[in-house]
Amino acid sequence: MITGKLNLLNLICVKQMVRGKAGDVECLVIPIEKNKLYVGEKGIYLDIIAFEIKEQKEGRKDTHLVKQSFSKDEREAMTEDQLKAIPILGSLNVGTFTQEKEPVSSAATLTAEDDLPF
Image (cartoon, rainbow, N blue to C red):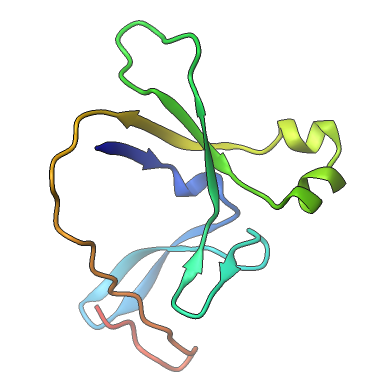
């Protein structure tokens, strides 16, 4: 099993309160194009890559760091400083396997006139 956490605030985003059916709801607005997300037929994807942590800090269980992944052409077009500036989005911990339930997507596409579905 691999567990991990991603800090979505390290993407270009805005955290704001939005009025929903149940009142004010704290939301995270993540621009698709600005974050170079891939829009596929069945979803919107953030490509990631994990790098093994060579020198483990005492008391940490993390085995890998996670960054956004880019195509070879995109990486080659970046300067060394741009490559180094890609933020760490989170970490992973490689452990033993246990069977878990399949995740269920509750994503909805809204227009400016729609109320939030929650």
